[in-house]
Length: 80
Image (cartoon, rainbow, N blue to C red; front, side, top):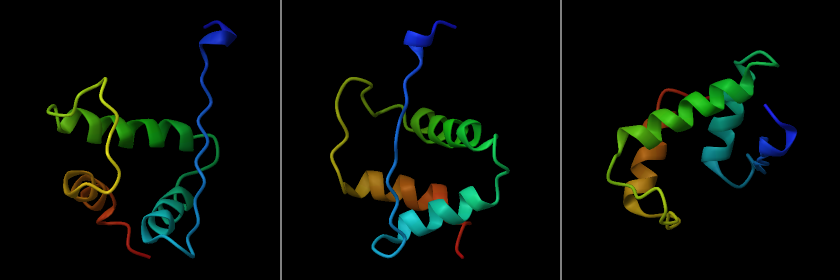
């Protein structure tokens, strides 16, 4: 794979201000270093492919009931 094909994604998580961030960090803590990127990709693709009604070209609106439900479903078993 050529280096220019690689895309870096950064995610800022603040567990003091957001329960989802706290749940994400708790989930990441259970995954060994070196495997986290793969686990995040798998989790995202499961959510994305589960709801085929989302457009691949349209940006997601923040805090829609549908998005909140998907995120809650994804992280429901990750209560600290």
